[in-house]
Image 1: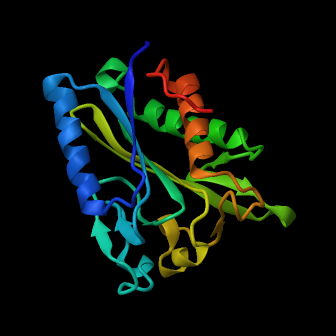
Image 2: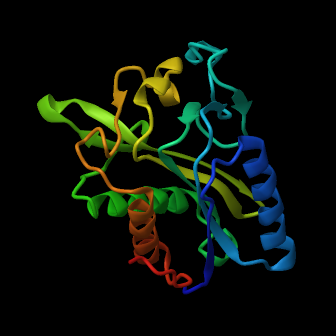
Length: 218
């Protein structure tokens, strides 16, 4: 299926409650009013979010940053400057009505975007997100995935570590996984701009999800 998706990019940090409110409105408009599907690219100020499976013991420093309970799946995660968050609001009724397939496609989207920077992102059974293998065989997480679906419209989405302060992740057990670390594109020795990451995401989205509204990536 080919469809037109609206892309929005926020140049300033977006408070988490403001983002949730905007997503709620857009999801309702997609289902009730036929509004276009939407991908929203943004960064948040430093904060922690607790998904529906979060364990309180995984919040190691509760007073460090604001903590928001959220309706997406998953456990604790960090958002902050230097991390590209992509909120994905798609109508699954028009895309096969298969949530498992949708999550697989989100993973594939991230993997293909990372490949444009010669980074091999990989899935791991039992570990949500996208992982990279470091020297010596260590595996670090480079992207998080957490979704929610309401009346077959998706929201929340993915977060790719471009250039965040990785020390900020130490306040939580990211996604409940303590045996592995986190990394970023810059931590791997690559220095793409956020705009370059956005262009990689736009191109890879087209490959995975179908035709999208054109947006120049020069």
